[in-house]
Amino acid sequence: MPERVGPVMLPSLRKRFESGDYVALGSRTRPNAWEAWFDEHIDAPRPRATRLLDHHFLTSEAALGGLGVALAPQAIAADDIANGRLEAPLGFDRDGTDYGLIHPKSMTVATGLSALRDWLTAESERSFKRQVFEKHLN
Image (cartoon, rainbow, N blue to C red; front, side, top):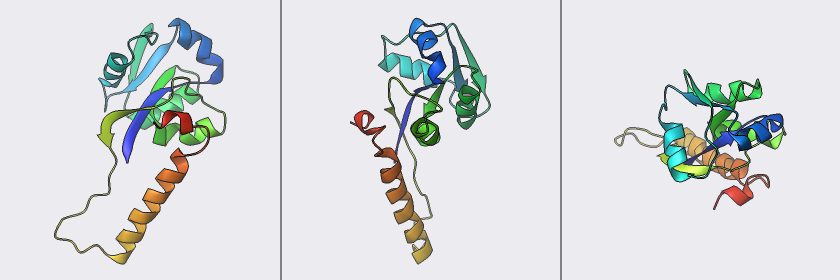
C-alpha cells in the first residue's frame, strides 16, 4: 500500500496555515519529510517554525491538540479527518514509500497470514476510498 502524506490541522488553523503563520510538526523518524514535501509543493506556504517529535504518529496527536500543522500519513489521519476533527486542505500525495506485509521467502504462507493479507488489503482500499479522500487518490 503506497504511503500518502499531507499537511493536517485543526479546521481553526487553516487561515494561519494559508498565511504561513504556523508551526510545522514533523518527526525524528522522518526528519526531511517536510523538505521533500515542499520540493513537490513549491507554492505551499512555508512555516514560521518546525518542531520534530519522536515519531510520525505523534504528529497527528499534536495537531489534534492545536500545536501546529502535521505532515501526516493518510493512514494515521484518516479517521480524524473523516470525523471532522482534522482537515487536509491540500490532500495527500505519495511520498515514495510503501507499507507492506513481510515474511521470509522460505516460509509457507499459512491460511492465517493469507487471511491477514486479504483483510489488510480490503481495509486499506475501503478506508482510502471514503468519499472524503476520493479526490486525493489520483
